[in-house]
Amino acid sequence: MPGTVIVGTQWGDEGKGRFTDYLAKESELVVRYQGGHNAGHTIVVDGEVFALQLVPSGVLYDWVTPVIANGVVVDPAVLIDEIDMLCRKGVDATRVRLSGNAHLIMPYHQELDRVTERYLGKNKLGTTKRGIGPAYADKAARVGIRVQDLLDPKIFRAKLELALREKNGVLAKVYNRLPLDANEICERYLAMLPRLEPMIADTVHLVHEALDAGQRVLFEGAQATYLDLDHGTYPFVTSSNPIAGGVCTGAGVGPGAVDRVIGVTKAYTTRVGAGPFPTELFEGDAVGDLLVERGHEFGTNTGRRRRPGWLDAVMLRHAVRLNGCTEIAMTKLDVLAPLTELKVCVAYEDDDGARYEHVPYHQSVLHKVRPVYETLPGWGGEIDDAARVEDLPAAARDYVRFVEEIARVPVSFVSVGPGREQTVVLPRAA
Ligand code: IMP
Image 1 (cartoon, protein in one colour):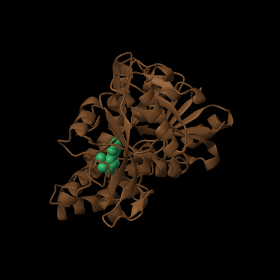
Image 2 (cartoon, rainbow, N blue to C red):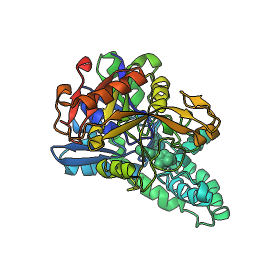
Image 3 (tube, rainbow, N blue to C red):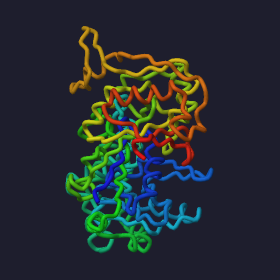
Image 4 (cartoon, protein in one colour):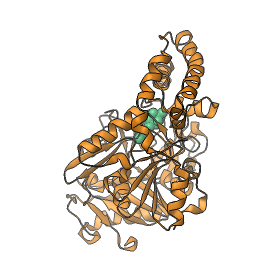
């Protein structure tokens, strides 16, 4: 049975975790295929909040095997802390399987992430400073250290010393920082091996065995389409490929292994960090402030205030193409409740009057365009207890229908609150 991919269609923080959680219930395997602990999923179960960064959301179901595949970059201390946190809350997270081919985030990656951001000054990317970019850079430069290297302490030390020779040179000579100590890092990382070893597995084999056995496999994207290294708003992107195609390299499956791609779309837009954002509502804008406040738009991970804006259907249409979305899951529709008017960006215009109905490939253009909005009526009342589509006010249903028409794929789910049960399943997906 082919697998399902769940992917954000905006700049992240669409609320993918809650749908992953929802779909994980029907899955045997939930697989993270890219990113690292720059992600942050919040899942609320019976009022208890689970904030996950690295462990796949499916961990909360005891029949699910959560898999951290080869495409992920892993800070082992973060993984162990997360597993301990889950165990304290009564979730047996030792079921997690970790690819031996996944790359390790090392202390120098985090240090370099911090200092390079500082060095970039006003041109900084606004990274999460978790060492993600430097870890992927080392992977591509073929000087990365993989999880499997921990299994052979001699190899681990040799690779670490080799890497540190260059990193310490850069840290000291370019950034005027103190060198890092190989002994200290070696000891710290190898001390974690007894905790990690039982989890290390051939995850490609695991995924294929599950697919061959007709089990349901859910591939959980972190970050989102417009943070994709190739297709996002480069350079204001992350260093991996969150789009559905990333599943092939990040988990080791062919394109035929996927037949359902769910694009998670927030009913409005947010982004953290720098970069172009055509529908942005700047700080002080009453609607923008309302979206941030009602939507609790502060990073799970970094606490940063997210930049808010109206829904951008131009970007959504393009995201549907890039991912081959078969459907959309819309989140946080409830946040829009008090607004009397809702805007959706349906095209862009530049100063010369040129109109764009697709995302312009030249980023200088994207920086300068103005959104062309279509205005829809709001519904002016809370919807957080809606359980079925008929419980939604007509204007809320019209908003969903408008998005379907413009994205050219059906909306299968709508979320109306943070709780697991606050999900409206649209009839055609039933
Ligand atoms: P990095 O992934 O830490 O290198 O950060 C690169 C860009 O991706 C920055 O703009 C971050 O704010 C953004 N980013 C990374 N992870 C997430 C996420 O999970 N949600 C939203 N933005 C993210």
